[in-house]
Amino acid sequence: MTDPAPDFDAVAPAVRDLDTIVSLSKRRGFIFPSSEIYGGINAVWDYGPLGVELKNNVKRAWWRSMVQERDDIVGLDSGILMHPQIWVTSGHVAEFNDPMVECATCKKRYRVDEFEAAADLGPQELLDPGIVERLGLVCPNDGGPLGAPRRFNLMLKTFLGPVEDEAAVVYLRPETAQGIYVNYRNVRDTARKKIPFGIAQVGKAFRNEISPGNFVFRMREFEQMEMQYFVRPDAAAGHFEEWLPRRRAWYEAYGVAPDRLRFREHRQDELAHYAKKAVDVEYRFPFGWKELEGVHNRGDWDLGRHAKESGENLEYFDPTTEERYIPWIIETSAGADRAAFTFLIDAYREEEVRGEKRVVLGLHPDLAPYKVAVLPLLKKRPEIVEMCHRIKDDLKRHTMAVYDDTAAIGKLYRRQDEIGTPWCVTVDVDSLEDGQVTVRDRDAMTQDRISADQVTRYILDRLEAARPRAT
Ligand code: GAP
Image (cartoon, rainbow, N blue to C red):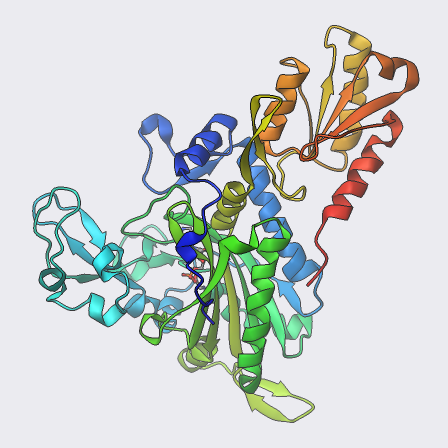
């Protein structure tokens, strides 16, 4: 399933230097370091006014294609805190580890698989006590000696109730999936779903990552968009093959360049403890090809174990064939932050227009924070400003629109280009006479003259026309 070479290093990232995106994000209010006035907290990021719109739009687009437009998938919103036994049963307490080494002098800790020499090794090899010596690994920070690898569990713990003892320990979920499995029977029975059917969930997940980084790529608090598809065991392989291209196509439909996406199948020795088969949709980030989303065949691992441990019957009875079985699960597991980050990177472009640099975020209109900006050509004329506000207020009943008069029109256009606003509406002196305004298109930079009364309809029609069809 891994895409065959051509030489993938030949595919250039959309943006060479990650700092371009980091500084745009800070400058324009997409993403800020968390707790900045206290010096920050590692691997947690906050979304600013534009970032929260972008991320909400990503989650909405995902929900639209996974739940709203399908008859076979329903939604769920389960708790972040769950019965601690769930994580024992699921295997996360015992198996959700990264092999880690610690420097004897500076005490910094590293994931073993992040050393280039160890990048292709499987989990067992990464835990080999002789690996540091064999590969000649030293501390990247101060060149100090590294200890033998140890397992480091990635789950974050807290306490429930007033007593902080072992009996009160609960985990902050490291994946949203388990909330779906333990609700499988509730949803199946109340939504009256027949197999195959799916349950989708968007929500926070937490991992005590040893080496977070690359901006919002690897965080300790993040959001997942997961869908668990319950199928007949003998149909699982076929469903897997359907979901994989469908998930890649979703990113393409929202504008990601197809040549910056690829599939990578996990080798047997790198599969997560729950997976029979796993293929990642990878994206060509500025720092390499990395996982964007995983599609997993989890077999009956989760429902089988939860049935056994809880003593509850989680079998499915098929009324047509009169068979009983534990459904197998095909999972599509995406990160909302990683997807938003990908759309941000892939949309970024710099162009020259009439001898000047223009920075454009060519975001799909459904993902853009603002769909439209309403701008006065002359802010000194109160009738123009008033007309702008009338148009903007009408638009705001339907979609995200903004008014701006803090610079000359050329600069206002550039600002909207840089945050991805697909359309700008300009009101000028003639508008007062003929009731017409100019609509400027971000990408083509064409200008249409339309009646002010028609602006909302025009923008909503263009949004509708741009929206991807169900796949
Ligand atoms: N339920 C399966 C599961 O959680 P995963 O491959 O560990 O699978 C799925 O995670 C997706 O969640 C990843 O493809 C990524 O988009 C996102 N993700 C995982 N860890 C993350 C982190 N530390 N920061 C941001 N996103 C993360």
